[in-house]
Image (cartoon, rainbow, N blue to C red; front, top):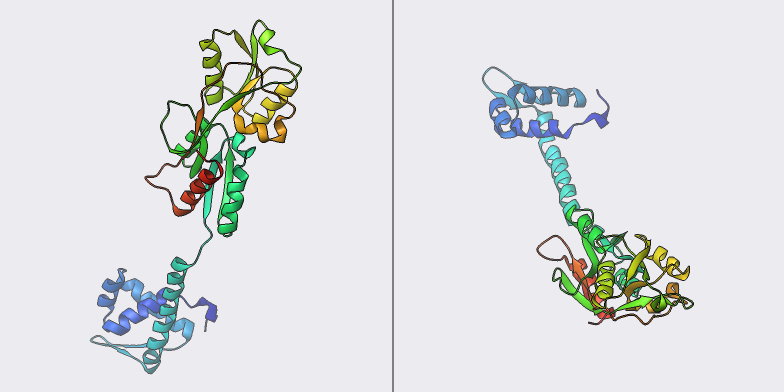
Length: 286
């Protein structure tokens, strides 16, 4: 006899098909396999159990006593397997949400949104991608993230509006930017909302400017400001971050406000995604 661990459930299914039809051809049709495969399954099952299950003749197929006994056992085994698969569809599986954030949000009160969400959804896993808004939209389009929170200009209308935010100029106290012939700008690369608005604002007031420092990292921009490279235009809520100290707000033209929004690439938001969006609206009132 073979090792009992060799019992194959497909062999049991073929046995039941024959036991219920008493016909190899009918059993093969029922299972969607060939008659020869049905015969192989029965032979291997008999070898594994070391008993004869069927009495075969040229005219009829009959069950032996062992075959009669096996029917109920086989049904129980296969039913238990079906219950296991049914259970897997009803288990409370941990959810996973891949969110994209702009770096300024990481330095804002947004971690409170995640903290509140974690308390209410301890089994939900959150992973974060930090990038500029236009980069996050590309990640969303590629299916790399599920939900993004980012910034868009005053004339854009995509996504779910969360709140409106003023933009402020940041510079190191010792720098006298307005006295310079050309204002040195510390900016993100092309595609950045704050870069575009900073340049448009200075152009509107006919002020000369030049790019003095450029980086994709907000931390690097703030470090460059503190190093005296120039000024940067960023959300006003950064004034509450210790990373901006001891920068101040220079006397430069006021820039238009921006909108912070939430996006996904589906017709509607899932319940956990909507909970994150509502949490952001609560912490950053419009």
